[in-house]
Image (tube, rainbow, N blue to C red):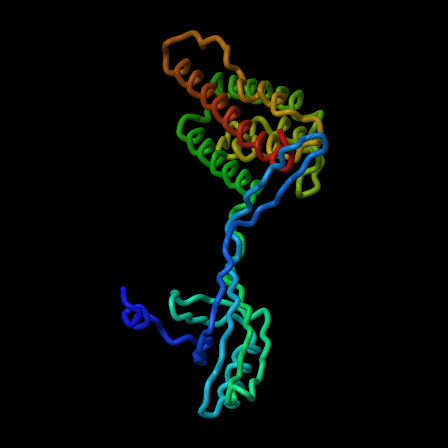
Amino acid sequence: MTAASWRAGLRPASFRGVPFHVREADVGRGRRIAVHQYPGRDEPYAEDLGRAARTYTITAFVLPPDPLARAARLADALEAPGAGTLVLPWRTDAQVVCTGAAERYETQAGGLVVFTLQFTEAGERRYPARRVGDAAAVDRSASAAGAAAGAAFAAMFVARTGVTGDEAGRHWQHIITTIRDVVGPYARPAADGMAWGLRIQRASAAAADLIAAPDRIPAHLGALMGVPLAAGAGIAAFRRLIDYDADAPPIVGAGTAARQLTANRDAMVAVTRAIAIAGGGAGHRDRDI
């Protein structure tokens, strides 16, 4: 490559569109390294923190005609706030901020104005990406799981009076007793301020009404098991509810009533387990479990 062809590939230098000539330029680059040195150990550890911001140190000058006006334009560009585009003869454009500049007037050189310029790579103004907080994610997942459990329960459970209703009522009382034993020692007042003990008493007393209107059962279970829990309530405590009635013997019989008894019991077992999983997660969401 000849000198003429090499020079032909150079571009006019400028900053914020104000032109200048370049005598020499240094580009600083590398990595951001934190060197850790430990007592009693000869070898250090160099921790790589990412690429270092590029720096540019440039000796620039402006020429006649009218070098003072040209120098003033460049000085204004250097002192303007924010980042600007730096064009160097042999490099692609860079967004930089001016971190230092010095002017020197050389009268013996016929009015030459020389600048010593320092720039630093500006980069982009980025903020951490927004994401759903852990507590919010747990609450949303718990709500979705509870809604799905309620829909499945509604499709399986049939409210009836007589034997079917009496059996469902007994099963409801067994569920309430189990929840009282598992959740009661750790339950704190819910957001509405109602004491947990009063809430579970009402749920127990309303057994007949709930069996007659079973669409309300999932909501009552969620209110009982989704309360905030005191410190010391390990997730293992919910295992009794998550595995609730896992070994219950089958209901004997082959008639319609027996089949419905089995379906109702299975529905109540399934909704109790599902809401225990959702409620246990929500109750523990603000602690390390």
